[in-house]
Length: 135
Image (cartoon, rainbow, N blue to C red):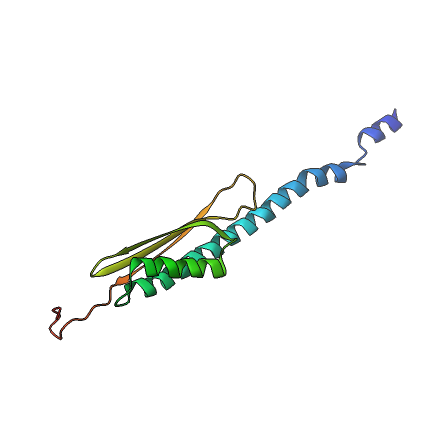
C-alpha cells in the first residue's frame, strides 16, 4: 500500500503540464505588448503626417490638395506597413486649417483591430494690415 500512496503523490510530469498551460499565456502577453507598441508608433506616424500636411495646407497659396499630397508622401515614407489604409481629411478655411489622419494599425494579435489617428490645426496664413484688417 505504501508504493501506491507514493505513486499518487508523485510529481512526475507536473512541470510539463505547467509549461503547456503557462507558455501560451506568456506568448499572448508578449504579442499584446508588441501590438500596443505598434499602436503607439502608429499614432506618432499619424501625428507627424498631420503636422506636415498642416504646414503645406495652411501656407499662403496652399490648398487642401497640397496638404493631402504632403500627408500621402509622409505616410508612404514612414508608415505604409504600420498604419494601413490611412485616410486624410483637410479642412481649410480663410482663418483656420485642420488636418486629420486616421488609419488601421497592423495586427499582430489575430482578431484585434486597432486604429490610430493624428490631428493638427492652426491658423491659415494670410496678409493683414498692422491694424488686423485684410488689405
